[in-house]
Amino acid sequence: MESKTKKYRISESELFNLESMRDHLICMKIDMESGDTDWDDSVLDRISEVESLLDKTHGVGSLVDWPTLNRIREIKAERQMIRYQRSLAIGYPESEAALAFLL
Image (cartoon, rainbow, N blue to C red; front, side):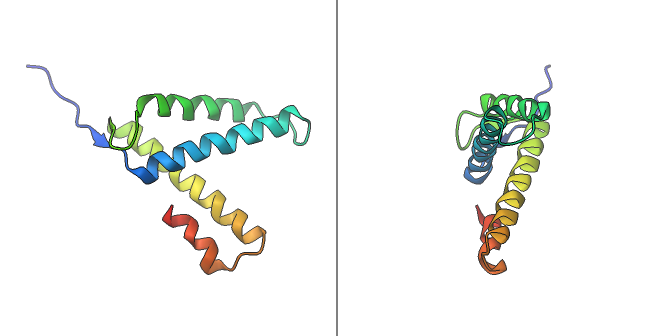
């Protein structure tokens, strides 16, 4: 009898933040290509990783294994923190910047 790996559903927030991280990284790549920022090969690696994770998800409610969901959740937390820090940097009050953690 074959052992079945438990699967977990992707939430709307997890997928949103994963897609948002891909967009963020692509913007970083464009800035590097235009010479606005220093070149960083790790950005290309991160884009590949996020796109690979997106390939495993086919939308909200997709089923993935635990390591995949765990990595998506780590990226979600990272993207929320980036959004929060940027909000503070441009002058939003902390109470408004904290809304980044609700996305």
